[in-house]
Image (cartoon, rainbow, N blue to C red):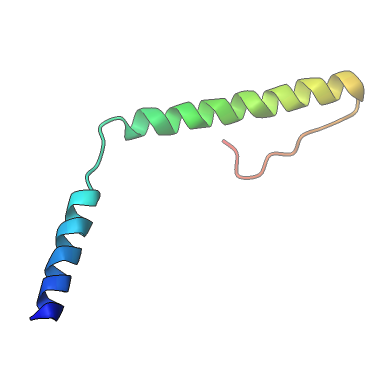
Length: 61
C-alpha cells in the first residue's frame, strides 16, 4: 500500500510540475538576443584594443 501511495504522489507531482508556459518562446528569444549583444560587445571591445582580433562563432546562427 505504501508503494502505491508513493507512486501516486510522484505521478501527481510530475504532471503538475510539467505545465508549459505561454511565455517560453519570448524568454528563449530574449536570451538569444542578450547573448548576441554580449558577443557583439566583446567583439567591439577587443577590436578597439587589438585591430586584428576576430571572433569565431560556434553553432551560431
